[in-house]
Length: 491
Ligand code: BG6
Image (cartoon, rainbow, N blue to C red; front, side, top):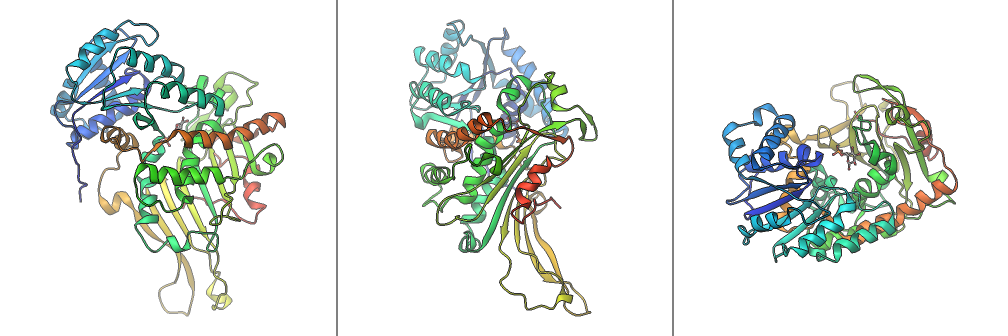
């Protein structure tokens, strides 16, 4: 079975930071995959823009290498590659001076009628200057959009300042704030599961759900991003954005439609209903961890401090939080979140734990009745498992068994699972904001995160060490077990 691809209008994607890491690992491969899928219309161009002194050919060689590294061998199709490379152009521009901007302007003039997207794959400190120069050189027309990546600030105040800066040049409808988790196939499937089935929604509340777990475990460490990561830490890097977005999609009310404003209004209400965590309860509701030397991804790995080269860092590489949503639907239903680097394996999932049956009619010999669980697996092995009780088949009386109704997407549909960026890059061209964060969402998320950061600082909440290759510090286990629950281990 193949999915249907609807071509998008011709566009010019201008990628600032065109020779950077994000362009190399994600953006160029994603755009190439969209070409193979037949989604790009003519004439479409991808314009690399950065300080490096390159020409079109130099950028094409860079892109060819990037594709070689980051797509599968059997996807490297020479005729497709050369067609793709022909779309690529390069302009050497300086974000902090006028150098090169006239060349960019001339190039874009030859595509006035196309959708024009500026992707700011650069550090946030350059967002303001680039936006100003885009405006100053009159590069904005009525089909222009701008795409920005996290980190959008490091607290509420800096996020507001950044949003103000971009907002002075672009209208909110033109600003696409990427949270790549929203582009993941299974995350979108969560919306389908909840709102395209009659089955779950009546049970989706505190009367039937005991608690929710959201785990995003990574096996990687710093990956050469020490400078950024040590100043951020897991709370800013993963919770403020990805984890809270997942929580919102699980917890939000049914929006009246899938339109961007409808969905984002509902997510915002969830963020605003989160019970504050501050110095008064942070030590009870949060756990910070930092990995020590151990083994991960098949080999010995250094501890965080060694990898960083700074013995004094107190940055958390793991965080676990018990979050509570103060509204009618979720009162009394904790949302346990945990995320960390250098954990046992890369595994991300959302687990909805239903309440136990009120009374068992079966005798003790039938076995224990285990409460239903819905496991939404984000990565790897995307899919959904609904764990239910059945009778163990065969003679010998009633014996109960806990088994999954298993829907592994790759097996069921036999289609390649697209990278999140493929969907998101095309949504920018289609001008569909549903899977992008609105300004008030980003700020509401910071509003909840800021007091946690402040509490950690004020109370000097320590990081507990955990051995690389394990499932995090013991305090994180205690966080959930003292409520009489346990973390779900992927099976
Ligand atoms: C990024 C974080 O936003 O998400 C990284 O900055 C993290 O630290 C990454 O590794 C995880 O993304 P994915 O898609 O690999 O789960």
